[in-house]
Image (cartoon, rainbow, N blue to C red; front, side, top):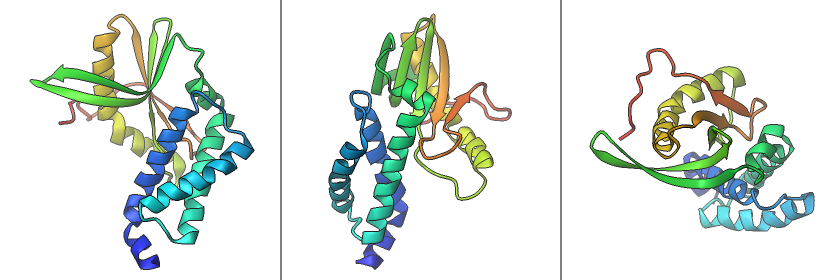
Length: 193
C-alpha cells in the first residue's frame, strides 16, 4: 500500500490543490469554524482515498495542509477580502471564452472581483516552497505571468473601460497575496495554446 501511494506522490499536490480550490469556492458562502473544519476531515479523507491516497501518514499530512490553507485564508485580510461577497460582482471558477490568434480560448478563473472601475483576477496557487519563499514566489509569478495576461485579455473584452489587476494568492505561504504589476522583461506576451 505504501509503495502504491509513493507512486502517486507526484499527483498528490494536484489532488490537494483541487480540494483546496473547491473549498475556497465554497468559503465564499460560509465561514468554517474549527468544528465544521473537523467535520470536513471525513469528506477530505474520502476524496483522497478515492484518488488512491491511502497511506495513513500521507492522509494526515494532506488533511493538515488543506486545513492550514483554509484557516490561513480566513484569517488573512486579503483572503477575507477575496472571499467576501460584498463586492459589486464576484464569482469563483469564472468561465470565459476569448477569441485570439484565430482560435477560441477557454479559461476558468479562480476568482474575479469587480469594484467600481477595477476588475481583480485572482489565481490560487496551493504549492509551497521547499526553500527560500521569496525567490520561489518570484519564480512562480514568472511561471504564471503569461496565463494571467491571457486572462486579462479575455476579461478586458468584457470590461473594456475597467482597470484590470492581476494577483496570485498562495494560501499556504507567508507572503500570500502577490499582485502582478507589470510584464516582466524578456517575457513576451503570448497566448498559451
